[in-house]
Length: 158
Image 1: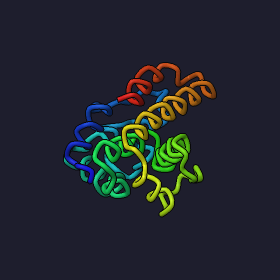
Image 2: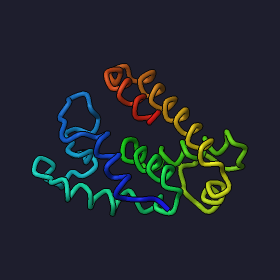
Image 3: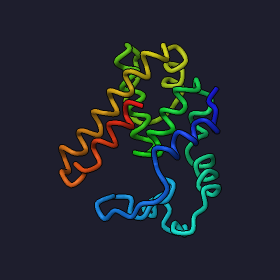
Image 4: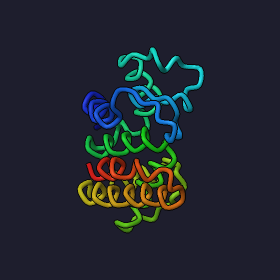
């Protein structure tokens, strides 16, 4: 079972405190919570505690029953690139291990069963590779994102 306190520390370390880079598609961001995703939220005055509650409410729940390291990895990817893409990475990694799942981004019963049957170490290795591929593809299709690639790749392999 995943440990939210451990996972949130990991995510917050990856996200940093605040950013307002004009090339960042999320716009103004604080503790990883973006204005684009939460347009009605006062991002500038967002507290760390409020961000943690948003993560618990909106991001953590689908993964909380996964093995701890796996829960943290899928949660972190979900925060960085969205739930659907994070689940697709999980599904593609499961496919690499021979699971018969569709990479539709839906965390349904077939995907959950495949996760339960998978070797977590191998699954994490495959997920890291898949995540790196997604980040590289983002840059290949949008060169303005090149400046983020090294940080994204570091995050993919953590």
